[in-house]
Length: 483
Image (tube, rainbow, N blue to C red; front, side, top):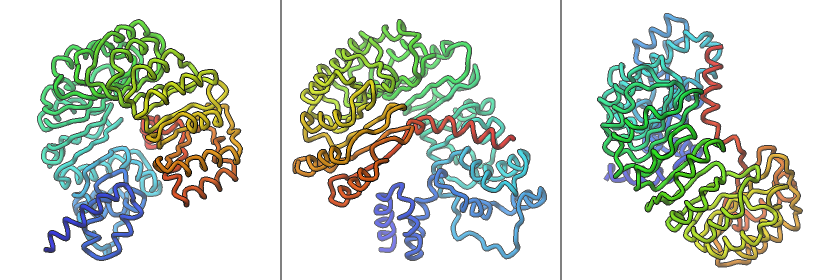
């Protein structure tokens, strides 16, 4: 009965997901609730904060603590209580960079790169020895950390399912190929011209579903690695592919079962290469993400649009061509999520999209001098969208300030309130310069009012930098560490 109650609590707490505040509250109820919730809280190393630094140190074995003490890295008190749990063993998601980030919060204890290296060595020894089954590993720009050489690494990494890395130590991929055979998601960022053993790692994977290839260095493209990857990748399992402009595009035609295809870097220079894709059929394709509205999309959507459920076209500068939006309206009638740009003179095309794409649940519309105004965008939603639409994302051009008046905004919210067949609204604002509609105090009051009324289910403000955060973050951390 006790075990049953434990399992039930675990199922309930899993629904809390990333609600860290609620999980922290669960810690305080009783020991059983604490035991169950702490496993979830410590599952992801991204949840670490400055308060967890002391906990990590407390979890270190005695030998590691002695090494820190001898190097005057940290002062250990004899009255320190042992940790209540072996927190390290709960970890399933490990970010090498984020653990390093916690070091930056203790500058008085870590006064040099050498101190950081010593502490890193002891912490990662502990992770490899005490984590029994790591699921996700984020490992960028730390080629001096040889994870696979630590005792316990084989058991720790055996069941790894996601790997995100760049600039790893020599033979890292080769060593992993001896351990990991069930990676489903592989995200590789090339910062050097070669990555030894990558094809060895790929060749032994039995369930690789997602492959991301990005190049961040100048020089030759990735042509040299494509033949070996093609030979070792399984067409039957790979369903998601992401790559940048320097990857030969015809590489993807080997994978007819792709369900998601993403072009990750903006580039107008290789249009002829893109045009080679326009007549190729991906019968399983459901999600398409592309940085610019390339002309080849018109024919590509005619062939592949009938199965697409999500289309994302970045159009912050108003490059989108009306013919591409017309292609979406005519050939992509089953889409549920759409992100694209409509210019101020393309209202008829937006109307056609709403009329033809009746499954549409989410739409991202650009607002600004080259695109629709907020008022026009919301008016089109009111007049022509179907009841399935429940998420609106307004993305502002960088030089645009909101001009939506409170009475215009409330008119839209009243319309939504009176549409009893519609779901509650999710409204997301994307704006780099923080000049969006929510900066008007009266609009903010309206948002609060209609959240309380249940008309608005979700309201969020974000910015363009979010998508690039991860790459910039890793570079900043490395720079700070080695000042």
